[in-house]
Length: 607
Ligand code: M6R
Image: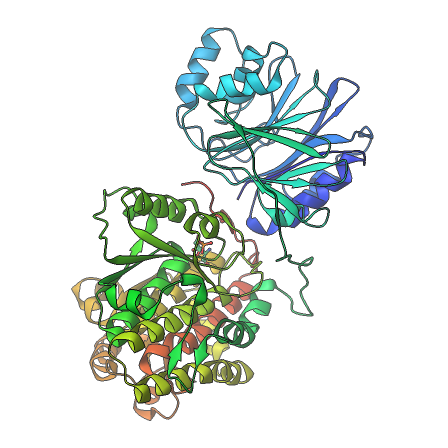
């Protein structure tokens, strides 16, 4: 989603800002822009498209050492050059870049227009430079503070002033901002990865804080005017420049990284001899584990699907009520937060606004919430204060693949730890630990010989509608498979529990309709088999993901994709892989922009 980079120092700012934007590209955006301050004047360029398109427009830029740059993911107003950031005040003396949403922008805009201000864009952001200019009387920080008093919504902003060329003002409420301190230079970004090439020493700006940024310094205070003393922290988890390693797309690379990612997630945590697991970051002793009466998993999209698998595993193995909640719904429905419940916020990026909102709601109501996050030092990880890193490594493709499997793995490790403290014997614990350890090699074995994926793809790519089905642990897998196909191939599809299908979606089926059925040999297999026969009787063309050697299902399917046998609770880690590959190859066949699908962002930092 939108990205912010700002620089003040002694080096030419422009190349540094563009490089920062390139490091944010994976997050998804549709236009980009940059502003520099040079000899008391603002110089600005913005462009629809990629950072490379902006790069072509910056010839003749001044050798300025102060500037701000932005990638925009459209929310208010179309994808146009005037709507791209930065936005200027009427005199062109104040430039603003903004992540987030100004919720009361229409009232603010009407009031400014009544004062004679002429707007040049359709964005919510443009109210900010006009408001700041209105309050500017010699003190940039005071002007921004004053302007923000009338603003309702979320923001991470960086403001550049033609008349104050030796400072940048930044502020945050709900949209991440990090300040990097270097030797005689200071950088600001919405994601530390944009600036870590220059400095690892960072200060995280918190909500309702504002800072005056000068060369090598950042003076932070609250929006109420109270000075903030904050120790800088060092970032060690630095992602290198993303490398395709010979793969044509990051998504395919990340699908193939899954055995290694799962291994990393399990390493040092699963204790086969003890039949147990250890997740030190949760800081939960056996006595605490025994006291947990309910587990609630909060997440969005793929992370929610991983949460669904986790909830089922916890109920099945630890015999504790567990539920996965869509974070965007949970946060606004005035949830009952139980004191004896453990809440787990599941997020790859650790920046998803809705998941963060749910975390804050739980905390506000006195609940205990831990993070289950990939990106080290991200907002959700820091807000929770304790939790589990899934150690997936950087996930660049917008469509999440290896993070799903690492999230499920971490949740299964947690399940083992919880179940062992409660009702699993040593022998049962050892068996579960052994089966977990086996997963990476099973995923690797499937990836080595994935079966007739292309036969499935031929049936999917021109279908007007595809139905994904699964029961038990395979229903979240069906949801995840359908999400992947929608996200990157734009093929209309939906997922249902096998038993629910005849209560409606079966009406969509006719002769030749593709139905993707995830049907491993588990406790649900025979019931799922009846559903398979029901769709087959309507002429559906079944693509079955089934356990190796299940000839009965193979015989009933148009396309049979066998997967290695696992424990039922571990099957999602393997059965999701053919669905990822099917979506990837469908998108490839349809000529889609696989790693940066239309309208999507990697990090959804607005609600
Ligand atoms: O970073 P998060 O895991 O919190 O992101 C949640 C969703 O936005 C994300 O999983 C989204 O659904 C992906 N594009 C799925 O491929």
